[in-house]
Amino acid sequence: MKTNLLKSTFIIALTLSLFSCSSDDDSNTTNNTNNVSKSDVINNYGDIVYQTYLDSYNSAVSMQSAINTFITTPNQTNFDLAKTSWLAAREFYGLTETFRETNGPIDTESDSWSLGTEGQMNAWPIDESYIDYVASGTEDYANNYDSIISDTTISIDQTTISGLNEGQNDKSISTGWHAIEFLLWGQDNTMPSEDLPGLREFTDYTTATNADRRALYLQVATNLLVSDLNALTTTWATGGTYRTVFNDLNQDIALQQLINGAFFIAGDELSSERIIAPVDSTDGIGGLGQEDEHSCFSDNTHRDIYANAKGVYNVVFGAYSAIDGASFYDLVKQANPTQAAALKAAADNAMEKVNAIANNAQPFDYLITLESSTDSNFGVVMQSVQALQDWADEISASATTIGISL
Image (cartoon, rainbow, N blue to C red; front, side, top):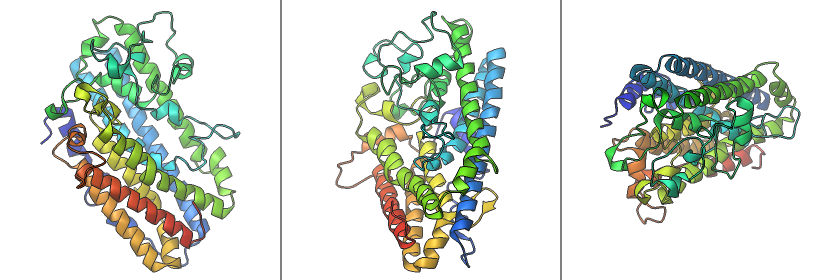
């Protein structure tokens, strides 16, 4: 069982929320398939995107409040609450990742409505020494920068740290979820079998060298993330800048874009970049790959994986929270019930395999030490990869049945 108090408290809370890993998936397929139109699906998708971003924004505001409380009164209790708030907010953000690769505002930069903030919000993996001090002897995987926090000639403000993001290479990350995560947990320099996250002391914000700059950095990075989420929420609101653009698209283009986001996360980003990559990585303590897991400082990758997959499920079946409307699945079922059944079976299988990671007694960074992507018999981690890629194949085949080519 998990022994870390923060993890235990968080997991108990999650079982009482809308993120139940074992009981919520089937409820997403109860939509009425009578006379479902493409317009219905597009409108319902827009509602889901907006509500998911709104929930992510609101949870990030709660995190911001907890972090501000800690900065004002830095003690162990407030430090623990700040970390718990990051975990809670991270859960909602994970659901939004299926809205990427849809030619939408989060990851486009060339249109008047573009925000292009995905990398600023969620870039990883990171060379943590770019931001703050790291333990001696970890330079092989943490790199060996003169950190931003230690360089007192660098101003710590939103414009400066956003301008420094990926300033040297794609791992020199200065902003977003994982920068905040590192500032809260610090490096995870324990062996995966110990089932411990990073062990940063709250005294890094009181008596340690650069305590004031570290606190300011944590606050500024958090404020920037909240601002970015607010912009996404506003643009996707009814009447918002991008929501209007999206609603005016040719219906087949809008459908292609929303389906492609689900296809991309299931078949590429989650299965390959976020699961296979750490399985085969040798970065991190002991050469065991944990430096390349998504939330490597907090050991929250198992929840990232679940939330990403659940976000795909929400899009495919048109349901999230109180929203339950016309879906991609409904269109497929109208066009080809056999293919719809294959899509549903693949989706359920993928969620089952992902839940085997999310609910596992062993942490993700330990599970990846037991497997390789070239094994002849896959364990729970690579089984999830296979299931996610099979699901992506069925998403693509299903799109074809309604005249959409991915």
